[in-house]
Amino acid sequence: MQSVLQSKTHVRIGPYPVDPPVVLAPMAGITNLAFRRLCREFGSPTSLYVCEMITARAVVERDPKTMHMMSFGAGEYPRSMQLYGVDPATMAEAVRIIVGENLADHIDTNYGCPVPKVTRLGGGSALPYKRRLFGQIVHSMVAAAEPAGVPVTVKFRIGIDDDHITYLDAGRIAEAEGAAAVALHARTAAQRYSGSADWSAIARLKEAVTTIPVLGNGDIFSADDALRMMAETGCDGVVVGRGCLGRPWLFAELQAAMRGEQIPAGPTLGRVGEILYRHATLLADHDGEDKGLRDLRKHMAWYLMGFPVGAELRRRFATVSTLTELQDLIAALDPTAPFPKDAEGPRGRQGSPGKVSLPHGWLDDPEDAAVPTGADVLHSGG
Image (cartoon, rainbow, N blue to C red; front, side):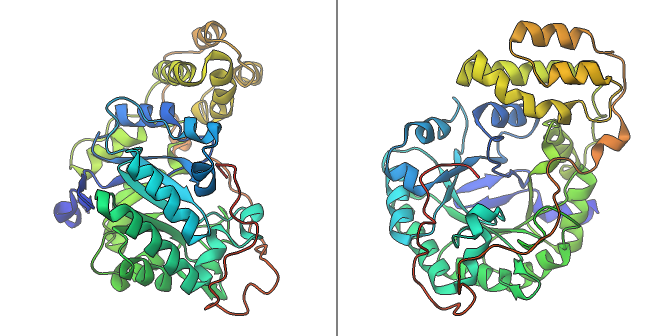
């Protein structure tokens, strides 16, 4: 597999070499400043680490919570931000604010979200079905970002469901409208996060989109998964989401694998405790100890997955409130416990497939460029 990657040690997104070609996927409530820094400490500083999804309207409205979410750390470069929106005018205005005030160096846009509250309004993975509107959004963002030299990339899914496939059109449209790269989560919206990603779709997208990088996303839970995806599909790089939950050291493994180096062994439970505490201090520095520790609780099951910890200790980790309490809990762990091999598999939300919620009449006319009513929500995340 390694020979396949020799010509892909890095990929360029606009002016930025992404080396190795690994991207931390934006995840709501996860990829804040603290988690991105932790992943960068393990991985390459020249890979991409994308902040939580930011809604364009919230940027335009100067929502205080959103402006805090848009924070980047000292030395974090390029600063990578993902925007969400359904109105070309609002998206363009948000981009003008971001580039005009030098708030980011790279802007991604999300048309892969399968959450019902988003798709039922015509947003997320429902929107690429409306080809003209999708093209207008990408065009407006690229036009607003181009004077500052800020690249715009686009992420999407295979389609709404097996009967409404959109990814090849979406890739060609994004390429034609000036996107610097595209990324495909190789599932339909109907699959949500269930089942298996169809990597063959990534290969077909790579054949259809020839002038910009094509990145693959879906079911990368180990360094070997990333190598196999690139070998099987010919994609230019990988986007990693759920696979790094509770495993920020995955970026060290990915870097080693893509450079032909020995992949480091998984950490002992003692080392995981050290990493967990580092994550806690970064969150406390960014959001304050109370909010930071509450935010950390959702990560506990991921960090401790597969280790012999015990139900009572797991419960206490899941309700931790202070750094001192966390130190005491970590001290109760067996530091010599080896990393469990079965902890390398799927993690995070799985869910089950289901019918996609869509606006009434959404599927009637794919050429309809009308902006969905009410989909440009103010809140960020999702």
